[in-house]
Length: 236
Image (cartoon, rainbow, N blue to C red):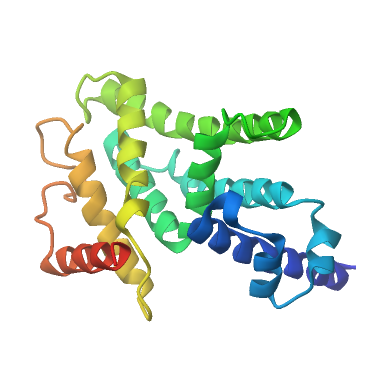
């Protein structure tokens, strides 16, 4: 039974990966089921066997994107350390996931923007609003840790809700300029993510040395070059 389940899941994973890439490149409106089928190397029949419409594929990509990032970040919420230490760890994990699953993050952001679109049918809008609750629940993970940081003094006495939204908006802005480079190693993702988080977290940190030493380390030349390279690629 387990083997047959794996066989059934694998085509769906390929469909979602191909759809995420297509939605990122062309947007939802300009992506066709034919585009997705061609990228998978399959017929439209296979696509419709698993999903009844392009919008249902979009919803599945959105949900998968939120599940992946939450799986990576949530264990860090109750990890060791102060609120600031945990916030740094969560933020780095978030940015690394964004870099690894860039197309999925683009789809989530499209879903957030489009939930009020008049072009959506009522059923589609309701489904998108329900999925956006996953994003709000994810935001609460960060909000709770920011509140812990304010309480333990590792973060300044700031508006927790506002700080959380500014933080996540700043981290998510990486997808505006970041593009994957061929042959890029995973450790480069981590180094660049730490450099991004260093810049962002400093804006909410108390005037004390970082417990991890991360916030006060100068940005490495290597990370600086990586950021410039990925930004140049995004704007070509």
